[in-house]
Length: 73
Image 1 (tube, rainbow, N blue to C red):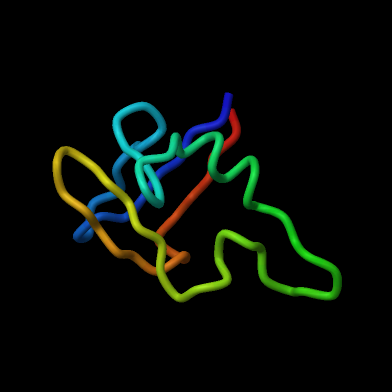
Image 2: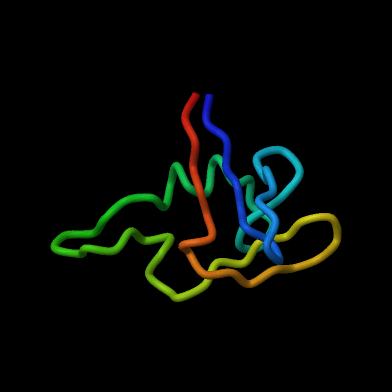
């Protein structure tokens, strides 16, 4: 099972079921579709900017891609 965590204001939060990413998309689907590399690129599509928008409990967070963890269990 895959879980998506985001560091929101210093706290690691599981956003897999209760959060959304980039215009209210499901985090699992978003990263499954966008965690890929175009020809010759060293940066995944979802990390090509220096931020990712996360929506969680009515707030929008703009965080650095290093604040995302994808955990397989």
